[in-house]
Length: 284
Image (tube, rainbow, N blue to C red; front, top):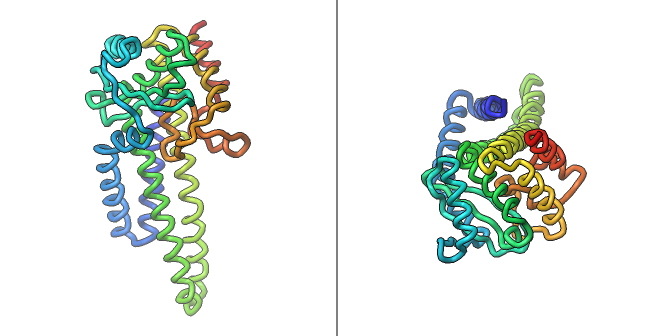
């Protein structure tokens, strides 16, 4: 069900981008939109993992550096039928973790120093199983595609907005259709990026639910993962990640950006209560 939902949402992003490209320049505008998206996706596919790891100062470790943690990831990767990913530790007291990489053969998992301190062995296994589930389900690539499309739609929206504003004077001299076209273009320039952002968030949320279920299957302890999520939710609020960026927030197991109200509505993560409830239902 979550896979079907993701496919539908990505299709909606594609339709939205084609429509905006057509609004700018007809068929040639559509081609331009696709070429731009392709270029952005190509760059993201090959380099996004290196960028995000460097952004958070992640340091690669081997079996001699942190034998218990490295061995845990190694056991879970074997259980999931995955190649051994690279393992990183982020020098941050805020408890969190994420996975990155373009495919299972070129994947990496990263955990903060804070998460290694506050979780029990079973809870940490649940978290790392969740991250390996993202690798197994190709969520890293899907998330990158969704983020790239959303970013491209925002850029096209800006172009469309400027085009509509600059064409306002010409529209006044025409039969009255110019004003209507300008208003329509401005409306699309404002609404489309918001719609793209909401679709991107829906993609992220659906993949989080799937990674929770797959991670519980890998580690065999749904309640351990549920307990870890509960701890991380509370601890990440008490110790927020100062270096966190909105563009990469969706990668973490819990949202590193704090805030309630409207911020919760526009969160890339599902409600924590719902995630925990689903894991508890799996345990039953």
